[in-house]
Image (cartoon, rainbow, N blue to C red):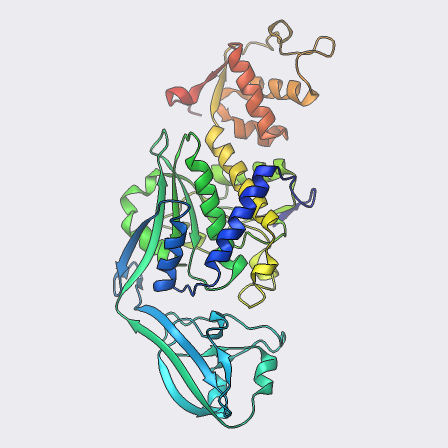
Length: 449
């Protein structure tokens, strides 16, 4: 992993602050819902997202074979609690949906504390924190609580109730599609299977929703597909239903754990040098914020499915503090009060910067390639403090002219020169205006090496 350290945060403009606050308010609405791999909580999440972007929900029946997996039965929970010998609810699902192991079977019984203890999950090294636990593919049940609370339980008989159903139903995922000038797509994916956990992964959901809302209001070169799906099984279900159109995915990005105030983490695609990898690297560099770049590994989030051998999409993963280095993840510490709307605004801005590179990158051709054309008489070069405001602008003009041979794109030039992508893009536009540069992408052509 390589790291680039710059200023501790982006300089946000008012629109970034507004979008960060809107993302946070959406997060507040979604936080109480008990999401899991399937069930009413996922569908209720999509109902709320419909207020922001028009989703198309798709359902896959339980028992459906998806590659090496099978869609499990649908799980829905209504209530759960543990009553102490004195009748007190010492563990209460209504207080926090983290208190029940996700996908727990229905149970109603009375157990001694010794009999109950193996079903109780805690974090002894963090005695005041409630862990988040799941059991999607193994029939069992259990509760989660703080270790301090466990130590305070008195001996005696405890009434245990989990009012839940685990029966044939559906897995639900949702898509939002934006059509562009091209049928080639950018796939943005995030997972929706976690309950009341703010950073992991309500942050991915709300940042994706805000990005989709912004892109819907502007012209687009590419088409965009936003996928909201339960982890692992959701992307696999989508892939199984879209195998014939995967060639349309030109770029892709998964979003998760992107609401904290730590440095951005970009994990490269399995290909390692896809356009999305280079676009993310240059965009994060240009933003001047702390970030780190990680090589692909088959461990982490849903990028594993999109980058599996037979799929191998050009798709990377964007998060903030790396999952293993963020103590609140998968615990009750991952609460709303740990999220700053400004951090959400920064994350949306970072996504927009990456998308902007993808949207505007193109190959150009220098129309005056024999030596350096005279820029001064075209008003592009400083005479006595003249046409361009910064030396960087002049440098960008020369770099664009030199590398616009039909083989290099603007992204290539920005990466090689060290100049900002915006400076390179603006230079290309100025050179086109005076007839020194041709945009090869307009004719859909690019020289072959």
